[in-house]
Amino acid sequence: MTAAAPLQRSWDARAAANFVFGGAGAGAIVAAACAGGPGIRPPVILLGLVLVATGLALVATELGRPLRALHVFFHLGGSWMSREALAATLLVPAAIAAVFGVPGAQWVAAVLAAAFVLSQAAMLKAAYGIPAWRAPFVVALIVATALTEGSGIVLVAASWRGELSALLTVAVGALALVRAVVWLLYRRALAAIGANDARDALTGAGRFLLAAGTAVPLALAVVATSGVGESGVRIAAALAGVLAAAGGVFAKYALVTRAGFRQAYALAHLPVRGARLARGR
Amino acid sequence: MTRWVMVADLNRCVGCQTCTAACRHANATPPGVQWRRVLDMEFGTYPDVQRAFVPTGCQHCDDPPCAKVCPTTATRKRPDGIVTIDYDLCIGCAYCSVACPYDARSRTLKPTFAYGRPTDDEATRRNDARIGVATKCTFCVDRIDDGLASGRKPGVDPEATPACVNSCIASALAFGDIDDPESNVSTLLAENRHFRMHEELGTGPGFYYLWDRAVDDDDATPGRGDPA
Image 1 (cartoon, rainbow over the protein chains, first blue to last red):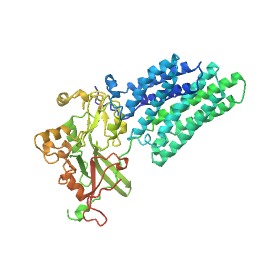
Image 2: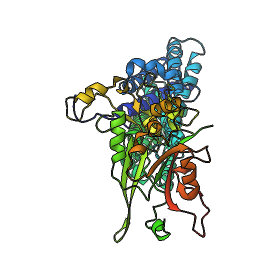
Image 3: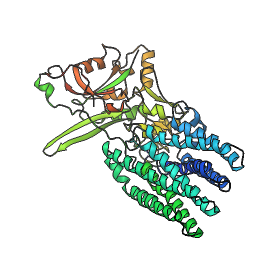
Image 4: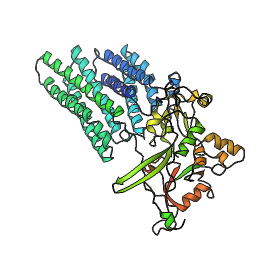
């Protein structure tokens, strides 16, 4: 017992991990269902499920009363955190069924994974106390990062298993580009609402996202689709996938932990000194 | 209907922090946790500067973002406008803390005491139900409910009024029913120009700030609330 109160008023790295791992994992499940071949779909869906579970396990350590964790389901009608928990819970059996090749299960898992990502995005949007989280384009940013990271994981798996297709490589490059555009729009929105501290806090992560997470993967995707020999194509595609997946990690981590500046106190009017004395009150 | 609100007169508050001490005393909050705070805010640049003391805390909003996001329904709004937390339901996820635009919520993860070891008073009033969960100003809801049950009037009778309001040395804080046109708070709001913090967010705070007397102003309608 100490005199210094261990207070917590903000989310820390454990919460950020839920967005990083959960987003990438859910995105991988969606991407695997949409674009994964039969050889890579089961392992990628399994990896996606492990990532989602890892994120949730980490954020669970942030709970003040972890033994009451089941209470998280009590507000499905209003709280996006409850909906996120429900989507994750239902995702477990659906993803396991998909891993074992149950017909149609990968589509159920993909829908639930998409619901999980949307719930995460809406969670941030509903956090009124943090201007950078309720800013325009935050939902699009979380969704775009999840899909890009997930498709990057699928691209790595496809390179590894020799199931590459030009369409998949182009899709990852296109998603990375979309993510970059959304990122720039989000940065502009932060400036428009006056959240300049948050905007500055995201500068480093943004540079990484634009350079290592977008420009380099795009260049590698071009190389991979231009016929440089099978091994060259596989290496270029795998690198593009790794960078596309990693590009959003720092951005989301910074968004949750560094850009989470609280709404400052503000007075619409200042007190008018002496006004009552002048009126004899 | 009844809608309990608090009114803070920015012209009267002297920043003495008596209300914060009274709140700590009444609610036995641990070190570092202040449900009632008085901000010391400075504005402008030298030599054109101004200072304001701003009592703040939970605003007991009409549409509280904390209650919307709470995954457990631990945070609820009563029909009389008071936003409450059920400590037995809360899981301490801190989502309400990041959803509150008024920085009104705290979560204490371990029992803490002013001098390391608990004083007799701290040991007596220790409440482990508040450890690991969200806490915030309750408008001294127990005093209000007990006062009403014994026929007293919140905002008028000290026994039924929040501790911070009772303690204010400058009568800068007032508490009452805004739905009663004859109440103290309705009268104050009718006679003074006022605003609510971050009104643009649409939360409908139940905490009003008086900033000027409106009656004699040519360009002011008495009691007009100025949007932020």
